[in-house]
Image (cartoon, rainbow, N blue to C red; front, side, top):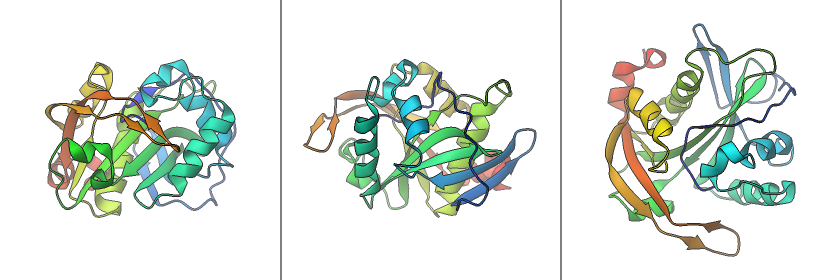
Length: 221
């Protein structure tokens, strides 16, 4: 994966996700619904994940136009790592967003700032609402809040690190509204390995501490 952007996609899915599938985090959001965070199964979730990440509106993720096999190989590689993990957010039984956590010290962002103990990086891709339901007010904010709650309280981390593309002003503004503090622009170096290729990326670095999250988020109270 190649971005931290909270990007909206135009793909849709009608396949519900059974409540019995094990979740690592579950959070009711008033006026929104219940958000369950499920580890991605690269094979079982391929239809959803491929439709989202290969769409033009997900360009900041760097997989636009990828085939199903390419997306499967990308997520199988991700699934093999101890430092990077992918999740689906399921809202009331329907996939709503794709979420990734990663250890900054094991990622190229670790070359761009001084990693502190308790840091965790996240990437977020907002999916479309269920067909016919429309997008509720606060849709992206509710999903970002649920993921941040999982990263900071569920995993017991001290600070969330994000690095959206500096051109993705929509993502930067959304993150700032939810308490993330900008820390300047960085250039993530190109990575060219047999199993993954990441182009150089000009990014905006932002942080959110657990103390700030607990002070400002309803889900943390």
